[in-house]
Length: 82
Image 1 (tube, rainbow, N blue to C red):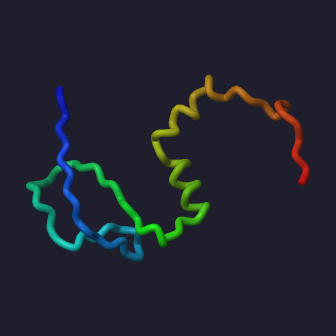
Image 2: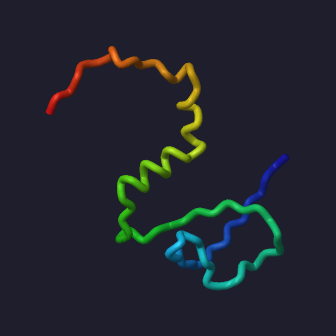
């Protein structure tokens, strides 16, 4: 089965509750499941805590939870003392 995707560019605002509010209605018939890509202006800084949370809940990294990925122990490497 071939999946054909169509891109629609529209502006929106992220409100105080971190919800996306579109500036105008979408030109599609719904309900429909979609993928959303958020492009942030470069002057918006995302703090380290937010990046770490995003990485922790991102399903792209789920493979790291598999037992065969757990290859290191506390005895590996050398202690670092700054």
